[in-house]
Length: 302
Image (cartoon, rainbow, N blue to C red; front, side):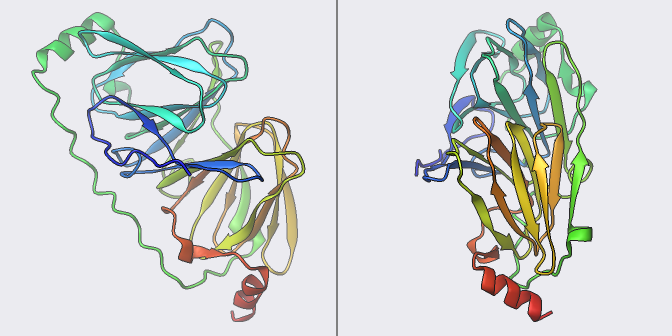
């Protein structure tokens, strides 16, 4: 497994190598707030269906910090700090760029079927945007130094070991996600406690999945999740210990919410499929139930 960069500093533009967990069933990478990125994740969005030659972004933020990566395909991120411009090519699912506040940024040279994932420190706020480059340069040069942002007190929510009882009828549901249509590529955004019914503390994704493989095959005691097929398609079989149901995901603007206490298995991955998961907690092995017999035993104890 590749090690993540553990020396992330807010307001320092930098390329970040993320963990890559190699698995013959398909690889997995993940991002935890205040660990792999130096901010609390408040909003997650992805840009897709970008036509050739289009440019996205071309603005700066007064306060917002971002982490940008290519989940599939490739594109360039061009950054300007008010003095000089730098370009980074993103073309790996385990490598991204941290963009501090007061940095002009644009994305360009999107390859066919590219998929851009962005994690943001704040919700959408039009007043936070600087959309005029000359204004940005003036403001950036006025700042003698970039003082670090006051970090949000987003302490990791402690996981507890008790098992939470759930039934399919009320613990799992498909959701139509916001889809902002744009000739330069569509965008779907998820805000904590609004489009996502929990606070996102971790984001992970499965990719490079061989034909016929299954992923998942476990349940969680407390964790809540939102699964999205941001590329390709796959099916999710849900099991509450009494009944089973299968949901087919094939649309980057549709999500599947899964509450705790549900056994879930992912299978039937199409070629090039990427499964994006927003999670309510950092990784905690004690929260997993990995043996089906143990899962059923927990149900019987209720």
